[in-house]
Length: 200
Image: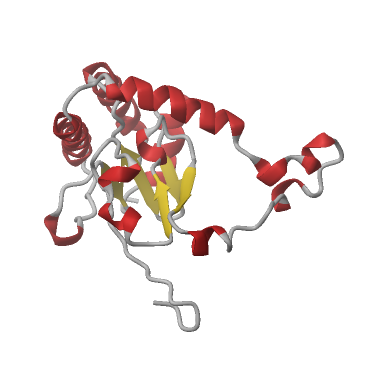
């Protein structure tokens, strides 16, 4: 609860489920704002959704925002709120596609199976996996030791998308990954490993 405003912050992490509608969130009816950042399950499109659930919340929403494009020298600087039209179109199409995939628990199981396969391949290649908090399952697999920067570079040149921050390499299972992606990843690892200094 924020002093002076009376706002209440509730969190409900959705770590594995591929999609969830606002009415599935009990917090949506208890809070003024509901924020969903679900890019990992919508084709990795970086899109966050802000839903307002009360008149008090709507009164706090600014009429417009365009800070990202204020410096643009063309018509983009007048675009209302920098609306991510492409992201919205992708989200609309992907949610329709996901709706036809069946049981959400089956989608979750698929994600975790893919992540486990990634983890096994990395472990067999000699990389230590970062332990997950409380042993919980996750679709993310992180490596923080070994020649991870070079591994990331080599994988990218072979069309294997990864996320590298200084000191951390992250692999994320996506709902559209299948055995052919895992086979391609395994082949890339087998090709790259002889070129890496695993003792460095």
